Amino acid sequence: MFPGASHDRRGYELTCPDCGSVRSNKFCPQCGEQPLHPNDLTLRDLALKLGQSVSSVDGKAIKTFRLLLLKPGQLTVAHVRGQRRPFIGPLKVFLIANALFFAAQSATRTNVLSSTLESHLTQQDWKATAHGMVAAHLRAKRLTLAEYRPAFDTAVVLYAKSLIILMVIALAPILAITFWRRRQPIGAHVVFGLHLYAFVLLLFCFSLGITEVDLLRGGAGLASPWLDTTLSLFNVGACFVYLYLAVRRACGATGVGRILASLFLSACVGAIVIGYRFLMFVVTLAWT
Image (cartoon, rainbow, N blue to C red):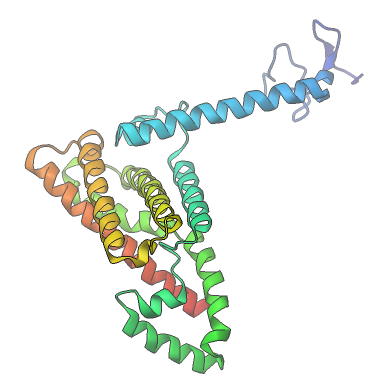
C-alpha cells in the first residue's frame, strides 16, 4: 500500500508517480500521467499493452504511407492544416523510408547513394576529378588504394544514412522560390520535401528490387546500360507524375504552371540526388 493514497473501485491505492497527486480517474489531473496499477505489471497486462501499442503504430503507419503513395500532397496538406494525430509525422515518415531504402540497398548489394570508391573512380561522371582527389588523399595518408578502399566503402554508407536530410534542406528553398506567390512558411516547404523524398526513397526501393531480379536471372544489374537507363527514366517519370499530382493539392498549382513546376522540380530532385552522391564522396574522402 502507498501511504496517503486513495482507493479506487477495485480497492487499490493509487498515486501519481510523477507529482504525487491522488487521482480520481484514469489519468492524473495535475500532470496527465497514468498512475501505476498493481495489475500493470502482470504478463497479461504487459502483453495487452504491447499489442495495443503495436497495432496503433501499425495502423498509423499504414494510413500514413497509403496517403503518401495514393494521394500525393494530401499528407502535407493535412500536416500544415494541423491534422496530425491520425498520421505519422513527416520527419518520422522520411526516416522510415530512409531505413527501408538502406536496408534494401544492403540486401541487394547495389549502391545508389553510398557508391563505393571503385564506382566513383570508374563509373561516375566525376571519375576524372575523383582520381586526382583520391591520389592526393592517398599520398597524404601514405596508404595504397587497396588499403584505403575498405575504409571508404564502410564509411560512405554511414555518412549517406546520416546526412540524407541534406537533400530535403536543399530542396526547401527551391520550393519556396517556385511557389513564392503562395507565401507559405518555409516549414511547409520542408514538410513537402520530407514527404517527396520519402516517396523517392521508396521508389528507389522498387528499382533496387528490379535490379536484384535482373541479377538473379543472370543479368548485369545496374552495370547494364540498358537497365540503368530504363530505371533512370522510370524514376524521373514517376517523380514527375507524383509531383504533378502533389503540387496541385499542396501548392495550388494549376494549368501550364503546374506542368512546368513539376518538370522543374523533377529535374531538381534528380540533380540533388546526383549532387548528394558526389557530396558523399567528398565528405567520406575528407573524414576517413
